[in-house]
Image 1 (cartoon, rainbow, N blue to C red):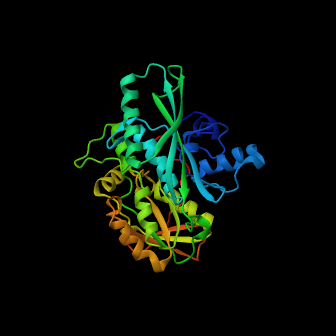
Image 2 (cartoon, rainbow, N blue to C red):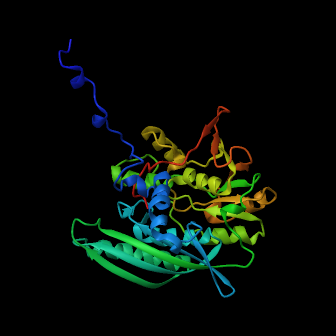
Image 3 (spheres, one colour):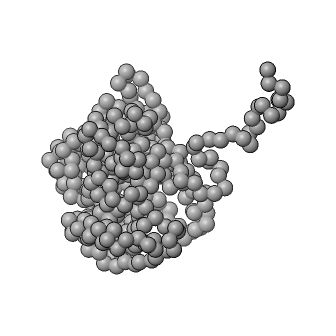
Length: 358
């Protein structure tokens, strides 16, 4: 029998701990950068009130700006992936491809990028050169010009080797109208290929994991795939590249913005066996794992098969599938139909399963 007083035995709330970041944290936690609910709350409750009327009213991955008779897409992104070199890529090509993809899924043809490097004192010049060469090669492959840039150096211990910011502009062709508000019940949900590869590739290096089948990042520029989809003349309502927060975060954001329900067929999701095995071992959900070379598209039902055929004819879309549909019921909610015939809610992630993967 324990003779200690009850107050010494029973834990108080001050002694409790939680592995998940608290939603009312007075300081920044890693979850605020995960692209999920905490990221949204940070923007909605801190940044937008602070910016006031200077802030844009529509908050997409790219802003649409009209200049004369031309519509331009403009986007910016910062890359802090750790490690800076991973199976299938580096932070350099990731920075180019990520910004190109944000422009592409807005329906734009990417034209030019800026590059800004934040370097930590003591980082080897050979590492910086490797990243810079990868960045230049990715820009050449994507056909975009690197037109301006900046370099800053921070004290040793106040960075993590290399951080990169890239901003980009692209031209939107007449008649292209890609936005969440156009998504309607009945729209087909298409995914361009196997999901979860980038996040697992980064995790494998970070944690020293070895797999029988190596997993490489899917980092790639998607603008030519998007061009092939739009060239069909199909009514493509919305596209997005499911990066931070994975497919789950992306479809949740679109469901809420469009005020529709989304039903995904879990058995149709293209999850490669190695990713499925790692997720099963570590208790992760492939739908929440980041991708860097995939897109999800919402297409009018009459055009879904035509768009799917165009995707499969492109090297980056050979594994494309129709994985679900939009419905009028449960607006703003995403549901996955399981192999057993049941349904489960696929919610917006609170934080991030794998931090600093892009």
